[in-house]
Length: 135
Image (cartoon, rainbow, N blue to C red):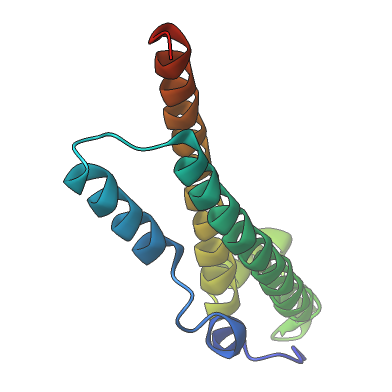
């Protein structure tokens, strides 16, 4: 039996810590400044997102553990009087709440990676522009 409620993985530690809200506020600030922002400010946002990445990556690992336990439970179950087939167990495991929570956690980690990469590109552009401005 799974020992951890998959819904609690999100609820316990990550309430109020939205990387998407942080990024949205940052982009509003960038827009309000007419696109003029110091590379250091972008670096600060990258650091904040790195903190979110660490937390969400941990959440993904926990969700994977819970999902794996649930999948093992399904693979070990019986279909009537015979063991469940691997293909049926795979389909049943993929349809569980545990699988959904794991996939959601995985998507969050991928989203944060994309945002960090976008900010790094912005930071490089700012530094490149600064180096060519002659100041």
